Length: 266
Picture 1 (cartoon, rainbow, N blue to C red):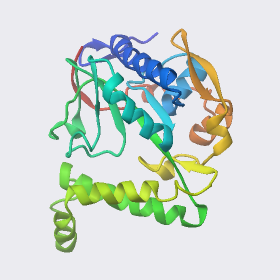
Picture 2: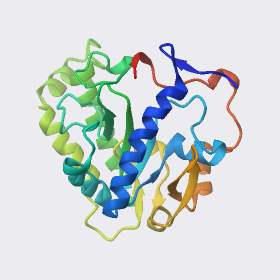
Picture 3: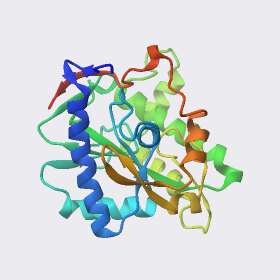
Picture 4: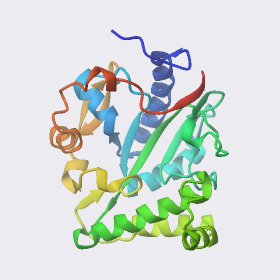
């Protein structure tokens, strides 16, 4: 087996820290009746490897917006002192619309965010799922993509110095607080309706499948690194939609951590 490292630190040691955070989140969710489940590469790893994909460098979770709001509320009092939440409410300069739970005293600096004033600690990602209405789904995601582009422009400098003066004026004029408020509105705008379809609008929504309500509420336990964590009973359908023939390993040259980590400390 390949011994993967990040900045000279064995990836397995980083995985141990991420599992600590996952267990803290799992305890809070179980104690408060908050439903969550493994997502993305973490779900794939659980099914194909019964744990981390050997070269994966993070943990991803999904929650419906309702559970996400409840989780954010209870962690204010219940999250152990060793960990803390970070999003664009706790850090105005945070460029993403998701929630990270991080471990104090660690370092995990992604190159693309290295110049952004974030905490840069080892983390796990939590992605809220929002209801969608299919007739407006493409418009909704298009608006969110544009709002993300504005945040990337203002926070990370993406798209600057391209000679597009109108874009420079418009993007520069929009306050980050307004951009965040509009992002929240367009992610949540259909959640009050009795709709049965959900999407990961918060991050690359169009790249993820549309979920039926029953598929994200009917959960089973799956093995992940020797413990049991929740996953959708329809994981096969979800993983096939996300990755195609997901049991097939990618080419060797693609079996590498995907985040550009330039500094790491446990």
